[in-house]
Length: 365
Image 1 (cartoon, rainbow, N blue to C red):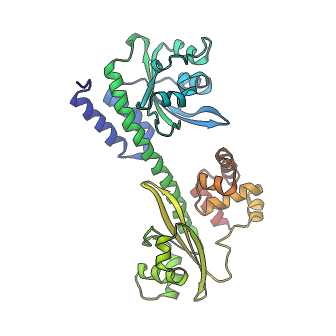
Image 2: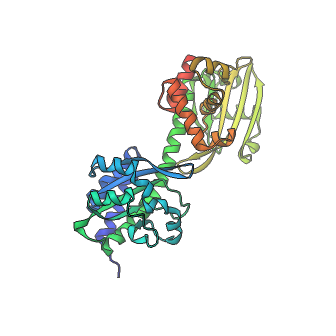
C-alpha cells in the first residue's frame, strides 16, 4: 500500500505544473512551493559548479534560512559536505533515487572537526537531504536542500516518499528550465543581431520556414524577388545558393553566392533549443564589397575595448550566436576558461549580458 495519499499526489502535480508555468523565477518558485505545499520551510536552493576537480557552491538562496548560515555553508561547509563530496558515487549506488539524505552516508562520514558538522551543530540541524539528484548523468548542478531541526527527529517514511516524488519532478523540471534558458539566451542574441545589424539577416527553421528577419533583409531581398511573399522570397534566395534538397538533408554547411549586386551567405548550424537539438539556417544579405557588418576586426576590438587576442576571438563567436560550449569546441579551450574570458569581456565593454555586448559592438562599429 502506498504511503502517499491521493492528496499528496495532487500536491506533487501542483508542484510540477506551477514550477513549469513560469521560468522567470524558477529558483524562488521552487522554494515557495516546497514551503507552501509540503511544509518544508528550512529549505535552500543551491547551484554548484566544478573548478579543477573542486566542487563549489556558486549560488545559494533561501526564504527561511539565515543569511549567515547560507554564507557559512557556501564559503566553508560545502567543502566538507559528504553528500556533495561523494555525490557521483552515492548516485551510482542509489541509481533509482531522485534524492539523497545523510542516511545514505554509511562509510562516508566527514571528520569530526569538519566545517560541515560544526554548521549542523551550531544551527541545531538534525537531518539533511538534497532533492533533484541527477541519477542519469551524475551532473551536480541545481539541488534543493532540506534541513530538519533536531527537535523534529528523523525524516519519516512519508517524508522520504514525498522526497522521491518531488525529487523526480524537480529533476525533470530543471532539465526543462536549463533548456529554456539556453534557448532564451540564444534567441536574445539573435534578436539583437536582427535589430542592430547593418546587413540583411533572416533565420529559418529546419524545414526552411521563416522564423525571423530584419527590415534590411526585406529591402535587399526585394532586389532578387519583388512582389512575392516573405516565404517565396526566402525560397528564391535559397535556390540562388543551395538546392532545397540539400537544405533539408545537410546537417551543417556554409555557402555563398552573388546576385543582383548582393553577397548572399547561407549557414546552417545545429542549435540547442528548448525542445531539443534543432538545425537552424541563417541567411545574410549584404552589398558586394561591404563586409564590415559580417566580420569583426580583432585589432579594432582590441583598440576599442582593450580585449586580448583571445578575448576578441571569443567576442567574435558571441556575435555570431555561439554558446559557451560551441566557443569551447571552436577555440579548443575549457569551459571555465571560456566563462573567465566572457567575464573579462563584459567588464571591459561595460556590459552584463550577451545582448548588451552585441548591441554595444554593433552600435559603436
